Length: 336
Image (cartoon, rainbow, N blue to C red; front, side, top):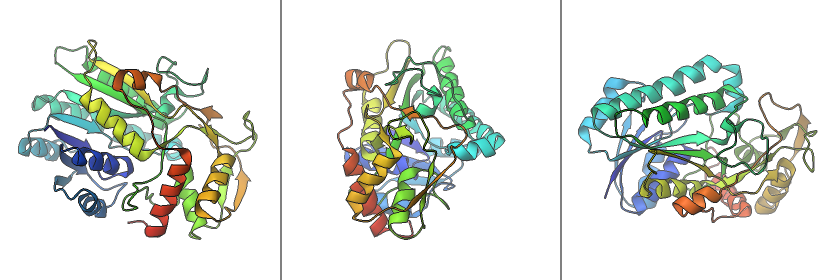
């Protein structure tokens, strides 16, 4: 069975991908500098799967250290997840985002080329679409990010597309995530943000547990049915299985493919609060604040291309994700 290198593999999404890969018998090598993750994740993955694997505390931007990892393992494919990922923070610290996300990707590509590894699945984002011109959003929608984080994803996509036009035999699958939520059903791995959460669902769960006093809704005057932002929320296990489908599916003749990973349905912040209250049996206190710079009113996917080409569709419901998020929070009130 193939061996897959996961950059950022100890993170929220990476850990769930690692579990699904290991359960199917793939070899897994994780590279993570634990900036946005915790070393405890490694033990949790082994606990869930009952399988062993190698991991390295390595920054992807460190070419020497990364090359040594490739020297030690016969890597067949790479899933590239490492990077800074908060929209709001990227507006405050754009230079940090451009330096980290772009440079680490360039180093990774150079090391892959040196070792003759040309197959990669890239963790992109629906933020590359910017303010939607039409809904649902299909892959041929114009790319027009509204924040530095989205710009880094769009730039990296272009790097990979340009590589597939070179003399080297690159095979690239770009996965544009919508909004990952939920946790593994075991409650052993889930989203554990540093400090105050940037994303809605860890914020909801921390308010429900009493760790945080209240949720701030960022804007209630969007042109949406209830005035709050609407997003396509996808269960992280479904997202992980989308990567497995991409690893197993051949890349078309132009050597790259782009797929949305979403459910095709949007939920507002107020709808999310209502569902989470039902899942946890508690009321969620909230206040309304101003809109965040770079946010858009609505964003949800047309996932039909992934269904047709990869045979992949989201299987878990929005309510499933609420239940699993709360299960994770109750078992890990202080995170890892």
